[in-house]
Image 1: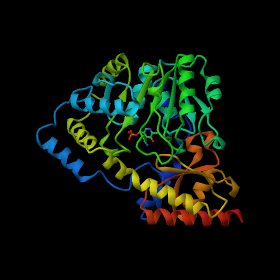
Image 2: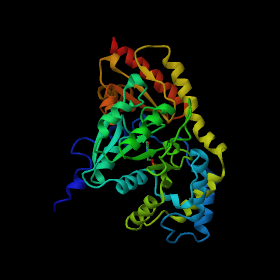
Image 3: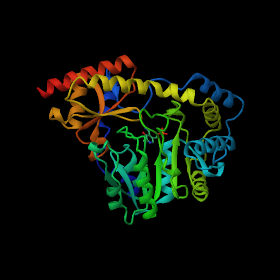
Image 4: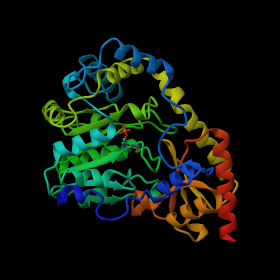
Length: 390
Ligand code: PMP
């Protein structure tokens, strides 16, 4: 039977860019020892106290259907969090609880774009962006950010693509590049959205992982609260990737529409997961800093280690859990380097090309194994790069 063009077109017919990842997984399944620096997942598990809260909630009977927009208490807690973080007064009616940031991205794009509408996004990008846009029927349009500019997009480049577009999707702190957009860049983006009447979808799932500079939410810019949908998640901030819990924050009419979408898709997030989220958020910044600390530590260690050579050039990440390394001095592109590294060193990294043309010639290294394994992997990577360069 024929499948819809819309769903068949999600991956645009090409590779989804995760070949090295799948190959590494197959090697591990076959019993091989591979250092996996691919997926954005912590090397620790969700803290026991959060699991205890989840268990207590489920055992206490909270296993039925839950409120589709999210539990009132969780919406309240998220509203308070966003009020504090963005300086914009936020009410529970501005919050839709969703099963993870990815579901939030889809919902936000579905709420703002009609089939055929152009949705802009910044290249390099988180691997799902073009597919998520296509899954809503909209047309993805990439705007390149340059490595020389620290992968912060240039406002004039966005403005050039903005005519006739409906939405702009940004992500700061950024996966894969680690860029944290400085205030002037956020102001420029906000100006373009106002001038071109664009919705702004601001993916802020890494907002607790900032190593240098400050996270600025564009929602706080003048005239932006009414046209911005902030996507948040507890995956990265609380090491709760498997719990599938996040939110979309935006103007009331958009949030009401997201409620309609949720009624007809997910029908809400399990109540015991939401109760665990309330508990986790109540632990405050101590817990969040504890979860973020290993990435800060490994980033500093990597920058120090890489300073001793000049073949792998690092774009120092200001946030998030990844390193972008320019591998072009080896004569290989990102894909060639990643494949050779897997074959010869049993180290798996993501080719930059998986994240867009602007990331070609780079690899993305997830800092998601323990410190000792991470250091070993980096040392072997540096040695291999030197060998291949001759
Ligand atoms: N946005 C970005 C930039 C991400 O890196 C991820 C996950 N890696 C997500 C959204 C989705 O995260 P989740 O669905 O786990 O909240």
